[in-house]
Length: 179
Image: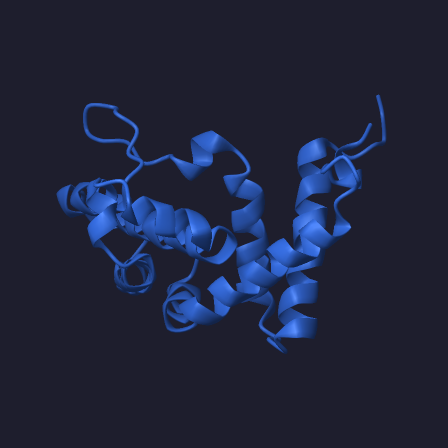
């Protein structure tokens, strides 16, 4: 049995480090729960199935925020809270890390071309913060802060992207992923 950390654990360490650096050093944001949440979001969304985890009632994967919003309205309680939280996470991820992709979404003619990802993300986190949960994976206070600090978090994710791009090797790969 090897003592080497798994690739997932290494990835989490990397994202935690660059997120802390971006938020603490570049932005002066000293909010460990918020920064930890953003780092965990990055690690989680490295998996395609997590990025597109919301499914319709018939099992179809939803990849449009508009569809996710409709699905959230069809759910109740904690299930509704989780869809709203995911909408917040999804929109934060795209607006922060890949704003150029969000602009391309506008040119597709699909339903998301008509919405403002930032406004929908802020609203989704706010709604999620107001839905009680028996065992909160993420506290209501943190979700409310994500709503109120959405733009700051999106900017921080842009700093995270710049930092990891700065660290890329000549082959475009992170030294972390080289075996």
